[in-house]
Image (tube, rainbow over all chains, first blue to last red; front, side, top):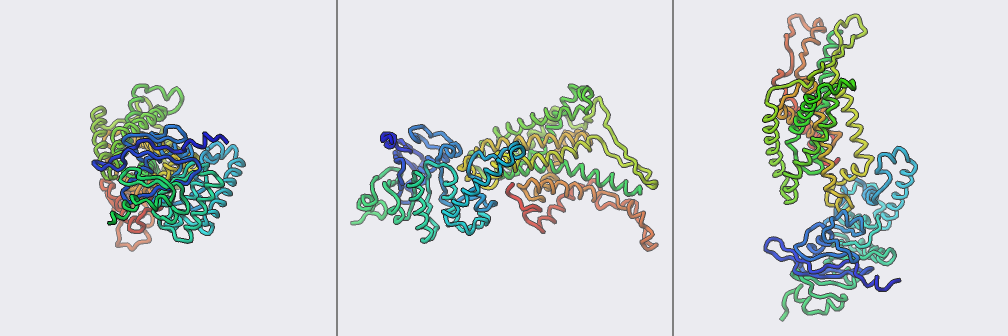
Length: 261
Length: 334
């Protein structure tokens, strides 16, 4: 494999700033996410993690700076365009199509299905059926993978908060993603499910080559999953390194717990 | 049997006519609501505008339809639908989109749409005045009289050409809408966006495009409903307020945000109106001998006088909402 290509970061944030009114939330922030990594992003509340996340995902316009994906400028692209380029995200508060079953939520994800064409449904019904069956099979595999097989025919709106989070992860597996942004995926998920979640993220990373950028408050999960870890504080990158380095950095401890004399 | 014919003429047919118009109007209102989450008050003015466009083109080329053997207004309808669709997109771009992008509360956009209503109404009156006009300029409205094959029925069933066309077009529009929503990519995108716009956006759906398509549908359906209403009766430039209330009632009764609900609601309101102004004494006279002799049947036995017709949709609205607060079809999502 071309090692030079591997070295190019898949996501590169360059000198991004963002203010809400007079509040400077992101201040000239630059980060890089290496291809194939599971990069963690931590920081105290109000550090600007979610804002930075929304800027990368295209849901929030930045004041200045730019975002690159595989070296290409994606600063002004919208979330739907980024989806088609393989940049997916989950939400801190899980989103779902509440009027569809869990399985249907997954089945609607793959773009450009034949059944979405009025003429195909009439002229090529066997092709439509065959493709739908393939999508269904894939969705069934995914739903077993995320341990939601027992609720696959429930309306997604009726699932618990934790189950919805898993469904969000499942959604990212229904299409060929390159980068997945996980916004506090562990929040509200119980411990046993969390172990599965971590395993699934690791598997997706290793077997399918997904790159993850993870915002997380759960330090155990960060420790198990992420390398490197980026620490944000007051809209700036405080440090970047392995979890040990982060834990042993007095500055980080201070940012989280205040000054200890 | 003449009473039955009378009932068919005055209730079955005219209920179907006003029901169809309300249904087509309510579909537009409900689609806009399900995608953009606000009540679009200017909808009835888009109906008037569409009808006015048809009238204008008919006045410019009064003989055009005769050459093809169809009424000229019908020939001009597609043009008016396109123009009204553009008007709808234009209104959205100028007035609603900036507000949406500022993330205002839906009520602000509702009030903006009230402003648009008044503006459109003023503009329409400025150009068309307030007097009513017939859509048939050089042609005559074709009236079909169907004789009943019974000896007892001496009167025919009367139905006009625009009424037949309207009913056919309504059926086609409903089938078309169903196929569009369930069998096309854009339909899928619309349903997704009505359920969860944020998730739709990160699932690769271009929500701006969905909004434009929604306005195209709403605008062209509005033009269609307005034109058929004007062809059935006449074009009154200030008809929108009389349309707005029953259409909103229909959309809400059916379950706002639900197109099939809008259709059901439209027909419910349409039939309720015609049934409530129908003179029941004509039917009762036939069965007079069942009643005790001292009871006389009054000459006029309508539930409400026709000038109070507008009350009926609201009575139904309240009654249905008490029984089923989300409307007949549980609303909110397509």
